Image (cartoon, rainbow, N blue to C red; front, side, top):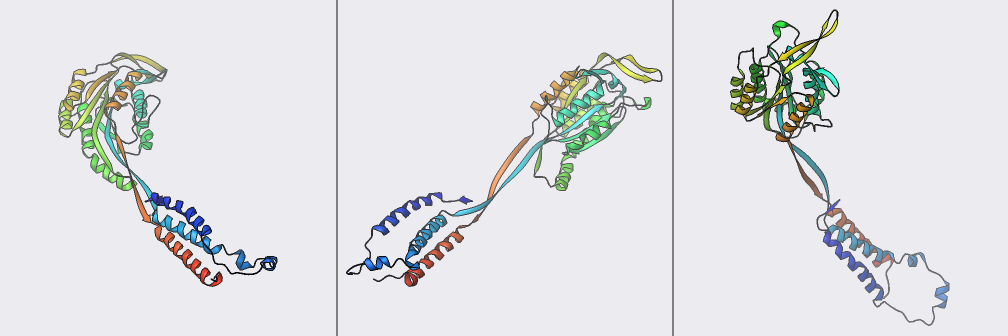
Length: 351
């Protein structure tokens, strides 16, 4: 219950004054020799209820004051308007990503570390805040680029998509088509508004606005396959207002564990990150390039991206009010009518 004019309650201070004046005011009298016998006769029911008219008048005054205060019943509504970011993760799954990297005290492949840290980036962890209000999608590539996860706000479905990203198994599918993967991710982001409108309609979400669109590229090699060069894909992304954040994973000498019929063996491996090209595509789109030689360094890069690309939530609060004074005013009128009837008939006084 809300009162539009609460200052009207100050009028209640007059009620005690009116009661005092009523009690002090002159009353009617009849001269009689003695009231001794009348006192012994006791009080009738009408005499015992003689306070009712005054009580009804006080109640009417209180009800009128409440009506003057304009009671209103309102329903508070909160509408969140999200200004999120559309993010496409572009993950290298070529054979070189089998090289080992340490993560939380364990040796894992670079690809597995990338997937773990990416999950923390989206869902949040002790080190990363998460991206609950952003559209997230994923493209994985080796010689060919494929959409793994469409842009979505339903991040609960992320784990199955990540589990489906595996290291390339066939030699003929191995390679590093950075250009094609970036072009595919840019095309997905170009259609992000269309995807978003459909999701918002299906899920009944509130209004959502894409604040910016970015690609996060993670690779440990150089472009050696595909139809487009990385710079051609960067020009395409820049024309659509998409920024590329390029991250070079590992690099240099490393070892990879391979399974054979005779057991697991560690073999030396070496990958060469084309830092010049990665830096160039990032600069061409207004993004940045960072090198991540460890899981900790990768988390630091994600944290830096977190600071640069933050989503916004604006909460709009509004009230729907309905005037409720009429009921109080009618109750006051009813009390006054009841008082008048009682004074004129049941509790009539002479004079």
